[in-house]
Structure formats: C-alpha cells, structure tokens
Image 1 (cartoon, rainbow over the protein chains, first blue to last red):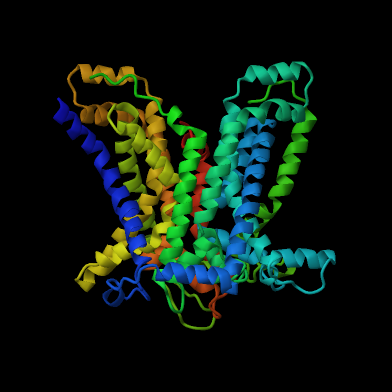
Image 2: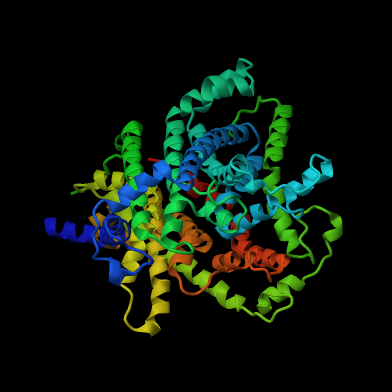
Length: 313
Length: 289
C-alpha cells in the first residue's frame, strides 16, 4: 500500500518538482557559482572555471560607495519601491472600496479596465506610455499641456533627473501593481459578513463611515499581504522598466533599479559582466528569500493550510 | 450587488465619475494607440488634423513592409506564429503540471505537503526573473551540438523556462479549484476500486473544467505578453522583440508600429470581451488559502 501511494504521488507531483528543480534550484546554484567567477560576455569556455572568490562582491561594494551610476541606481531602487508600493496598496484599496459601493456591472467594468495594464503585452503597454510621455510634441502629455498653455515647448519628461524619470517609472509601474491590491482587497471585502454593512446602513452610516469603521479594520491581514507581496515583487521584477530605459524614454541611471541593473549587466549592450551581475542577483535573492520567509511567518500562512480531511486510507 | 439596497444613489455616480477621472490616462493611452494604427500620422498629439483615416498601416504590417522608403521586409505572420507557439506552449505546460500537482495537494495526505505548499508560496513571492543569469547558463550548457537543432531548442527552452515562472501561482490556483469539489464524488470512485489516477482523470477533471480553462488562459497570456525571456532565449522573433527592435530604428514609421502593437494586443482584448468572469475569478482564486 505504501509503495503504491508513493507511486501515485510521484505521478502527480514529479513534473512540478522537476520544473522547480530545473528552473529555480539549479539556476540559484548557478547564479551563486557565477558570482564567484570572472564570467564575462558569456565566454563559458574561458571563464567558467576561473574562480575568483569574493572579487565580484568586493567590486560591487566598492561601486556602491564610489560609483555615481550605482549610487543613482540604488537611490532609484529605494524611491521607486517605496513610492510605487504606497501607490499600489492605497490605490488598490481605494479601487476595491470604490467598486464595493457601486452596482455590479460598473464594478466589473472598472476592475477589468484596471486589469488591462497587467494583462497587456509588456511591449504594447510600454509603447502606450512611450507615446504618452514622449519628449517631443507627439507626446500626449506635452501636447495637452501645450494646448492648455501651461508650457510653451515640449519637455523631455523622462530625461529630467531625478524626479522626471522617477515619476514616469513610478506612474507606469504603479498602474500595473494597483490591480493586484484591487483584486485581493475586493475578495477580502466580499468575505465580510453582509449583516455588518446592513446594520450600519440601517443606522444611517455613510459609505465613508462604513469603510472607515467596518471594512478597513476587517481587511488588516489582506493589507499586510498586499504590502509584503508587492514589496518583493517591485524589488525583483523589471520587465515593465526595461523598454522605457532601452528606448531612452527615461534616463538610464535614474530609470534603472537594481533588478534591471542585474539584467542589463548580464545581457545588455556593450561589455557584459555576468560575474558582477550574478553577485548583485545573489544580494537581491537573499533580500527576497529573507523577505519571503518573514512574510510567511508574519502572515501565518501555515495556519491557513488545512489537511485534506476527506482523504481515506 | 454587494452593498445593500438602502445606499443612496447619488453617491454611486460620484464614485464612478471619480474612478473614471483617475483612469483617464489609461483609457486615453490605449485608445490613441489603437486609433493611430488607422491613421496616416500618429495622433498621440491630440490634434484632429493629424487623423487621416487609412488602413494602409495594417496592409503594410501584413505585407511586412516596415519602412516607408526602404525595402526592408519582415514576415509578420511568421512572427505572430512564433508568439503563438510560445503562448500555447507555456499554457499547455502550466495547465498540465498544475492540474496534476493541484490535485494531490488538495486531496492527498502525505508528509511534507505543508512544507511543499509554503515553498511554492515563497517561490511565488520571489519572482524567478532574478535568477535569469543562472537560467541562461543552464541554457548554454545544454545547448545542442547540432546547429540545425539550435532554433528548435530555443523554442523548447523558452517555453519551459517561462512556464516555470507561472507554476507556483497556477498550482495554488488549481488546488483552490479542486478544494471546491465535494469529496462524495471522489469517494464513490475510490469505493468502486478505482485508483487515484483514474479518479483524477475520469471524475475530477470533467468537474474542474472552468478551473482548467482559467489556468490555461492565464498561461497563454503569460507566454503571449512575455518580453524578457523571449528576447533572452529565443533566436526567432516574436511580436514583443519585433516592437522592441523597431521603435528606435530611424526608418520605422510610427503608425505602422502602432498597428503592430494593436495586432499584438488583440488576444488580450478578445479575452477581455469573452472571458471577463473567468479572468476576475481566476485572479481572486489564486490568493485564497
């Protein structure tokens, strides 16, 4: 019986385990290994076996202290993650609360509209904002402001450092992340017993009072969940930044976060330095793994995982 | 209707108006892109005079005539087909693996089950894109010797690597769908002497069709929208890398790129119009314990 169960389990689970092993575990080990080699320009034959110890890490920390470009990138990472996080969490909460108080069909339409940034192909999404923030007079923002008479010549928004570039990347990524908070908060609001809202309504409470006194206090767990999840995701993802930088819509230094720096150092134009990129990736991974671990502990996910009670045997 | 009937009506319109106002840049941006693809000049500058309707851009896109002046041609149908292969591949693998793993995590007791689910959550929280340097080294080390196989292998690899990113979330999503099925269905099969694999295949899968569809849809969109993995691993072009390469090229005609972008956006729009409930359900299903 025992052997049979093992067989069944491996039938169901082995494809997933193999995928996780191949594309998470092995790459993690490889990334750590590369960070200790002199790997450059993907010249595996020459550099793969050339182990240099902590050289890349030393270089990285030296750059953290002295290289103005890396300093700009680190500052950008902090500002970008911080402000986008606030926009994502509060924006998601406001949208969820807003759609809670309107009729079902309008609410669905609004939710779909805000899913659009996450669901559109990244290249198209970037293209939309490329035209919107374009530094010439074909840029939508520029032409609106010029028509209103607020500015007389087009402004290259993304090239104004640092706040112009920061505003563009925060805006573009803020819209993508809002939908996550919106969906999570919507589902948490739907789990709140209707009686509470009905009782408050009968007592004459307004939408604002209901939100403030009932809905928001009851979504505390989801609030923490969105906050921590979105933090990790903003720290480690870069696809929605990549084209904005590559197309020169935003300034290279003040439009690049650490995660994008890893990618561009390993795969970008010019000389590629995978050893350095891997070292930066390892530092990001450590933050990510620690953050993920703390998140799981704080949110107490393990309590939510129930045994499958119906399983006979 | 989630709020109760006693709520005042006028508030509703105020809230809707406020949300639309905030959404304006989003609506405007996508609208101008789509409209520009039917115009001789980009109309992103909002002046009505630059809107001269034409379908020339679309004809040129399908003929692969990129440059207005030069003779550079690209086979856009082939490029679209490549994008489709990646999307379908990712969707297929994600669906298969998550229906398998989701079932056993939802229905079977075994040691390490809890740990496995927590680990999956952590992988979901920690996006694998940070590991791309390692994923690429693995790609290089497994490169086929035979040069004629290289292009095929790059498709194979990009599909697997991209699918792996979606697996933690889809397994949780699928587990959630299996959790909603009452145990009685399963017991009846097991008591009749069927194996778990047979129960999964014959009883559970037909009951879980909407879930499978949702996961397949998400997998498809993930593969379809991808840029980073495709440009890193795939030798052939997809719509994403096509747009990436052409926006900065001096010879590219902007409305033409707008047409290519609109073409690329089409599946997303189609899913939006046909599968709204599935999309909204799927997104909220993934986060339930």
